[in-house]
Each structure stands twice: as structure tokens, then as C-alpha cells.
Length: 135
View: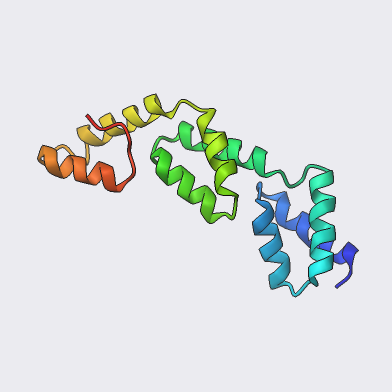
């Protein structure tokens, strides 16, 4: 597969949703694209801002905040699973004040799922989920 064909495949992969550099790289590897062509395609897509892990992280965090479900730790782990550098993820997460966000989720959980649990089990559940705001 040449550069133009690989570029076309990558752009089609990026049309529906934002993707990380690692996701695009893995997709091209599955299509048996040569490593040097993958690098060329990735650099091209970065150059025209089709791949931007920074934008991806921020969009992902904003999405998670709109639908409060995950702890800060869970958000971090999901981003790391996408192949994004740990220090980059941590840097972006520090920009957001997620203490209040986590507090709202904990209160919501205590009113529903954790309502019938004793205090010790509640704390254990919240710690396992990675919540730092446990009262």
C-alpha cells in the first residue's frame, strides 16, 4: 500500500470521531501498511491537525464531565489505554478541577447504588473506583 492509499484509509478512519495517534497507527498496522509509510501518514495528519492527542484528551475529559460517571483515576486509565503518554494525560487532568466533579458523582452514588451499604463498604467501593473525594 502506498502513501496515498494509506492516507485515504486513515482519513476515513478519522471521519466519524476523534482518534489518538496510537489508534490510527494500530489501524494502519492492521491494514499491513509499512512502518515508514505509517510514519509519513501520521506526520501528515498531525501537520493538518487531524490527529492531535492534546485536543483528544481535552475533548474526552469534557465529555466525561458532561456525563458524570468516572472518577479522575478511571478517566486517566481510559486515556492511557488509548496509548497516550502518562505525563501528558496527567498534565491535562491537572488543568481541570475535578474535585467538585468527583464530589457530585460520590453524592449521586450514595443516593442510589450505595444507599443500602454500610459506610465501610461504601468507602471500599469508592476507593476501588479510584475516587479521591470520599467523605
